[in-house]
Image 1: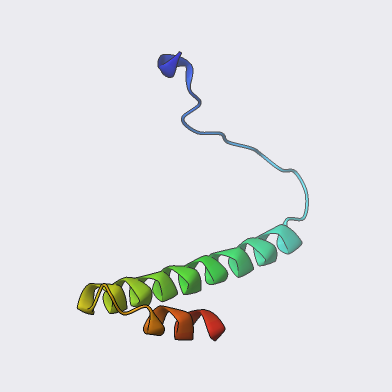
Image 2: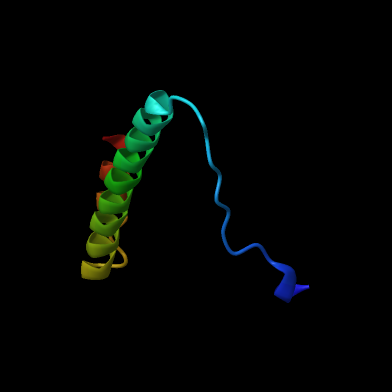
Length: 61
């Protein structure tokens, strides 16, 4: 079953993909921002794993 997994899909779109590209750029921007925020939370938790106040403060932002 594992050997039959799809490893990649290539789709050719024969039209204007400007709106799709713009939407995907927005998604990528949000993903990068979320990744950075999660890195910040990880750093805070590594400094003091018992300190949940910083985590609560971060969630309120």
